[in-house]
Amino acid sequence: MSWSTYSSSLIRYPKFGFSLDTSLMDLDEAFLAEMAPKVEKAFAANAALESGEIVNPDEGRMVGHYWLRNAALAPTQELRDSITKPLAALKEFAEQVHTGQVKPPEGGIFERVLLIGIGGSALGPQLVDQAIGHGARLPIHFFDNTDPAGFDRVLSDIGTKGLATTLVVVISKSGGTAETRNGMIEAKAAYDAAGLAFGKHAVAVTGTGSKLDQFAEKEGFLVRFPMEDWVGGRTSVMSTVGLVPAALQGIDIDQFLAGAAAMDEETRKPGADNAAMRLALAWYASGNGKGEKDMVVLPYKDSLVLFSKYLQQLVMESLGKELDLDGKVVNQGIAVYGNKGSTDQHAYVQQLRDGVANFFATFIEVRKGRCGDSIEVEPGNSSADYLQGFLRGTRKALYESGRKSITISIPEVTPFQLGSLIALFERTVTFYASLVNINAYHQPGVEAGKKAAANFLELLGAVRSRMVSEAKTAEQIAFEVDADAEDVYHCLMHLSSNREVQVALGKTPAEDSFSL
Image 1 (spheres, one colour):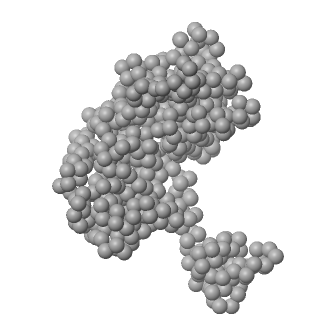
Image 2: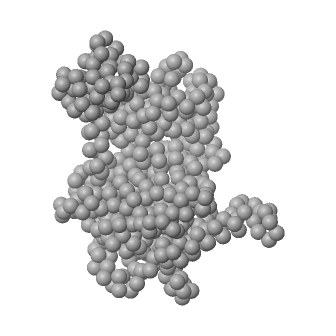
Image 3: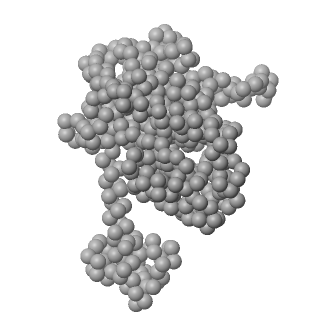
């Protein structure tokens, strides 16, 4: 790689200190010329999406997350109002909580938040909390699974006395998502046990008329904020999903939205200096348009430790599709994983350099080391110098070993800069999906998993009903309930592990027996 290649290929947005370096991805002129028709089509598809066309045909929905940071783009006044009015309302509510106008019925003020959600309804707020929530006005805790031990640990951290000053934010578009529903039921049980009125400590973010909306009205929740069906979970962090908890934490959500809007403005423009299109083309070139290479995300900043996990959902749920828009089997997708630098110097960078060359790396550089002055950890060098050295050294070492990489640079981690990063990758996903001709905005695989889980629960109930004091094998019970013996065995092991039945182990699972 030459200096001239780096200089000519670097994309910079000086107004907010952003740069994108794809010089180590080896994007040659022949490839760019070949992709020109697809690129033109992708820009047209992007314009149609932002204008309000139905671009999620499977669900008959518009895709409007770009409108969230610039409501003027929404095609109707009704849609514009559905963005601006909840934004004003949630700001007012957060201010009322902070000033004590909205307070617990037991007295005092709200001191912390418990957020209950799953997928994007938790991961977005978790990223925001980790990246820019340090020293928040209201610290935040999460129920983001249906793990009972996880519930117990979070409730233990809050403490029984702490529940009285904890504001619960329940986030679910339908209100029927099992993990979120279970978390809410567990939280309500804890409040009931403490003699506290759950509804007087709770807020809902949900679709109008949903199961959660109805429950919130019945229980007398403090307030309900709408969640629109044209915003997908993985792109919802700038909707009420992400803004309600962020505002309660005291985060500058106006700057968060402004950062996204600034990146949107740049990446909406057709041309060679569009960072999102350049990223999409780099992804395409690396994996031959088929996702043949994984993406390893390496942010060199502790506060961005969850960024790789956030991108994992955004990219993999959006791009991991069996069929393209023409119904052809394509099995598209890009696998995403990562942690943070320089931690990975001591973890999996060894394999990245010397092992299977099945990836490309995405480095996230944060130029500013810390607020305030740095000491020298050795003569002439600070900790920030070392962090920069590890980033540059790893990038170079990987390329020398034939491993390609992208480097994204921002000046510091602020609400504005985090918003710009999220918007960059959202647009990149939109462009890449068009380049490979898939629907980035549905998730049939997720729905299939939910259906399979429901089937298991139905079988679990049937197995419970067949348990008696007389010991039976999995095969015997499977015959009684007309099910697969292995599936029944897993039900039985679950019941025995949770002390509902007793198990007598045989030499093999087929010889294990179960009884009440």
